[in-house]
Image 1: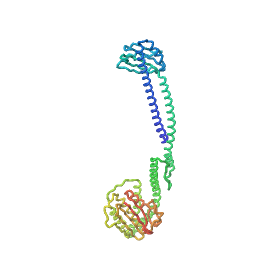
Image 2: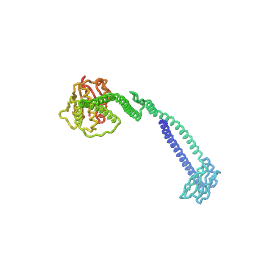
Image 3: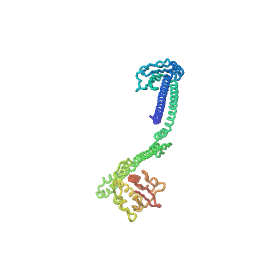
Image 4: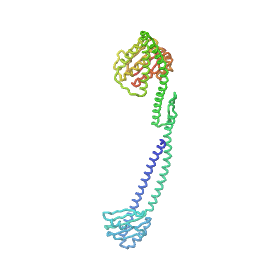
Length: 452
């Protein structure tokens, strides 16, 4: 069922039900009040009649009949019976109305049970015991509340009219509100249906609404779309680039190994094998980078332990120097009174090592003087790690894409690589609550700064 229809049904049914119950309660209370008020009128008239009978009965019994004729029109239709203390009938109104339950009521009336009320053919019927001037009397009154019932019927018609008006108004308001509430959701659904992940650039989904929950929904949806599109783009480009970039070096490696296999000179074979081994390790490193990136992008949980960042850095430098012995890394600690505690961090050592290796290898590949500087700055509570090298710098319009998958700047056209190392490094630092950014000093110095 559509949310618009659910809102329409839930809201309208709730309001209509509450309104119906309220109107029914009003009608019931009015009916109870009418009955109580009319019975009190019957009691008052019965008590008044007993007083007149006692006062004028000494003069003439006929006088009470005259009094009865005088107020016969007090009620629309009425029959009154008065009995003395011995339950002997002493007065009966001139009405022809019969009281079928008179004997039953009279038998049940007593000094201790001085009030009885019931219904008889739509008439209000009461029985009372009244004492007047020390004498006890029993009175039975049966009357039809014409004016009370007329008012009740009028109220019933008014309440029914009000209820029908409420139903109509509530349905119109519910329909209007349901459309207003459901419209942004329908728009979001339509935009989701039209969204094409295969496109390079897609506009974010914006909803024209003031509802906080819907705004949050659209924001979270846009975040999900961005992550999904990044993953889709990564998958799309990784397949293309991996197949393109790995095909050639693997083919070359296989070809050179086949040539070595055909050689008979053992010394020549031994001299050629280290080069091929290095190429194989390089391919293995590339594959490892891709695997690590895919694991992180998949949201895999990582374990962390207390490590020393400088020790990992020195291990990375030692590994790189085995590959590039001519390259020189100069490490600095600033200020002079360096607080070594700032170097302790909760981190996943293999991942941090991979990120630092990527930064150092980047410096190796793009340095023009076989040198790079590594600086640990502990002058504040934030550890700042700076890796810089002399060489060609990125243009201003390229710097914003340096941490984008497979991006290669103009200064990298002659360098091997896939444009994945820095992407992986940034993702690893982000997992460890660190931020990395790139900037250039002048026209010949590349600087990567990590704030942790």
